[in-house]
Length: 137
Image 1 (cartoon, rainbow, N blue to C red):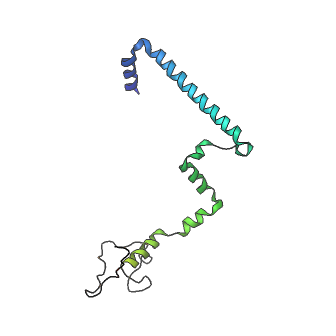
Image 2: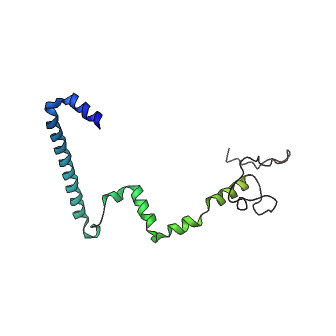
Image 3: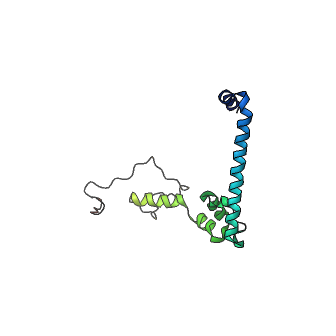
């Protein structure tokens, strides 16, 4: 802040600085008045059903945060019912060709939702080939 003040004194000089500050504050005040007037005009045009409309709600982050706080859609139930760690463990097991129901291999659920990434996947026998998908290549 001090640097900006020193820079302003050097650029405009101590004689013109008060006039420049007045002009800037007057311009900012006019811009604020214009935006408030535009907001009031929009609210009047929308009608009485939008009297509590806030322009900050047009920000996507604010809109989503409000919708998540308002649980009319049941989003919290959906979010809490989805266990990402379990789903990822099942996908990992499927990719590695492990049976998720077999008791011989520890599943992610029995290890607390953790997948051991340090273990190398089991390699199939040399004579077996993975399935070939001509559309994927």
